[in-house]
Image (cartoon, rainbow, N blue to C red; front, side, top):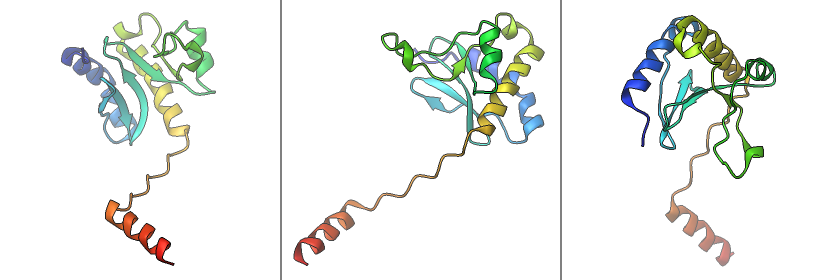
Length: 139
């Protein structure tokens, strides 16, 4: 079941102030049946199919998430050691817009601190690959 439209709208409304604070807009592209949360092309959160919000943490912010009792995103039940660096907001934060924004700012800051991913190289067309292979065989 995909993320419910009502929950997605609710989260985007709560996170709208981030657009003014950081410039740009908070976007929610589809992500493996759920939604990613991005700002300036940097992923700072995700919403799972069961309408659970997770926020990005890094070495700087992770201790705060753990101290608040936040639950780490572990998509593989049989591989808990392969959990990802995303945490639920603490209890009560979803009911307090200011508190949720405080945690979301930690996530955006973590995303902005992360090194930018190098752009993917364009793949050569298949015909060009075959031609190059043929040229190499004839040499």
